[in-house]
Image (cartoon, rainbow, N blue to C red; front, top):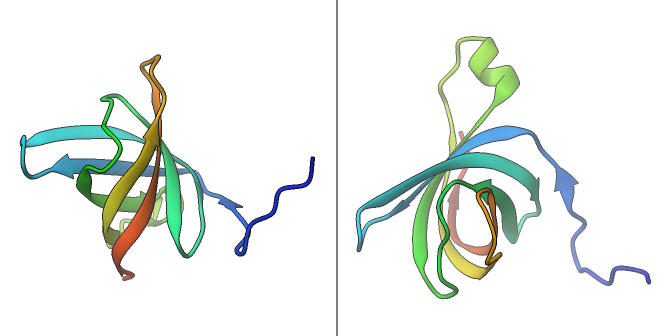
Length: 99
């Protein structure tokens, strides 16, 4: 089966922090892949579709180089695996800021 996406997924290995400002839950994990429209991450905490999260991503090579600049975004959760951890969370960017 061929994947029919308007934008290709790009694998990315980076640390991610997810924050739900309503419940004040903070989760940590790793990016699985990313597109210009959204992201897939492995998280230590499950989230519910529809939740809005703030996320911060720092690439490993940036951290190793001593840079703490990060991609910051507001994400709407589209789906989350029921079994975990890790929980596979996929979301759509509502806002995106690149360093």
